[in-house]
Image (cartoon, rainbow, N blue to C red; front, side, top):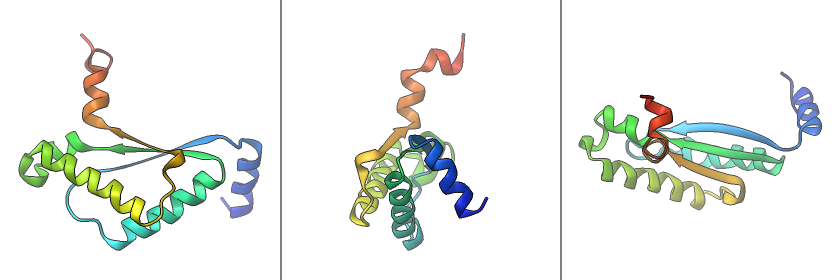
Length: 112
C-alpha cells in the first residue's frame, strides 16, 4: 500500500493495535534500537497501541544465554531500556512476556 492509502486507513480507524516480537538473545544492534524507536513512535503518534511479545521461552528453547531463563529475562529488560534511551515513547507500548502469558493462561494454551 502507498503512504496515502495507509493514512486513509488510519483516519477511518484511529485506534489500532500493532504487534511485534523479539527473542532476547544478546546485544541489540543500532537498527534494532534507534529505528525501532522511531517507527514505534510514528505508529503510536498516529493513535496505535504497540504490543511487543517478548519471546523469552523461545529463547530458552533455542538455548540463548546458555539456557538460563533469568539471564534471558535480563536481556529482555535490557532491550526495553535501550528503546527507552533511544527515545521510544512508552505511553502506548506494552510488553507481554511469553513465559508469563503462557503460564497465566496454561489451561487455555495447553488444553486438557
